[in-house]
Image 1: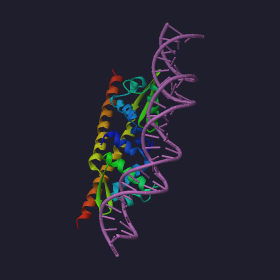
Image 2: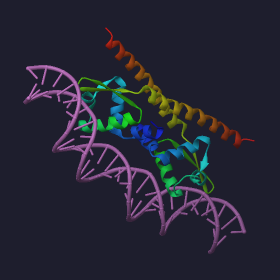
Image 3: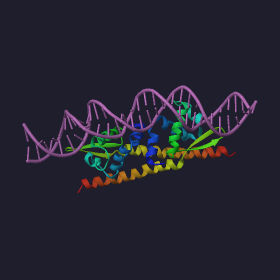
Image 4: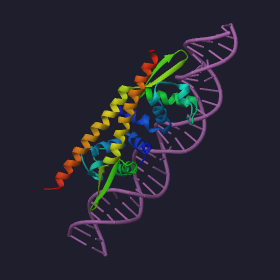
Length: 101
Length: 101
DNA sequence: ATTACACGTAAGTCATGACTTATGAAATGA
DNA sequence: TCATTTCATAAGTCATGACTTACGTGTAAT
């Protein structure tokens, strides 16, 4: 749930590929694994990490597990960078003023 | 310069701490290393990774090297999540419509 | 010239984690 | 009940990378 976990979760290329696939909508593990260069268990493990990071949610549908993006976790990341961006601009502006005088 | 490198760069806790410190303005390596639980060479190595990822820029000032946030790379990350957010909302909406009918 | 300062790089260690195959568990259908 | 499907978990392997200390390099001051 922490930022730490989210960033770490998105660092691994394959795991980020899983994450990006969910951008087009909820999907079963089977479908997620298609096209990816790793085994289905590997995808399961990645999904577990993404879930614990708060980036993905899981819902059962019969034998299948449907994974979706966690909009809450995603918005947290978005706000992190929005805030970071604002702070960076302020700091940049201040460092310019300081070099004037 | 790729997304891959940026995400990987921000995954390591200490390295992200270095990155976050730069939010308050440009800083020399000495200053950056203060308060961090690792050696100064470790900070140098982290800065190298951040620089290659396009998240940080370097400028020489006498004996010192002043590091700053790379606003270009930072904005790329911000746009990534903005776009991701929009796509996610669309997909979520479509998946709701599909479950209606 | 030499000393001091600020920093990067080299080399080596050690833990972590991204994968594999094998196995187990829950739901569905015959 | 038995087989099938879909998935998670266990266990083990192997590469990667986050650190350390030691050393080298360029700049400034005396």
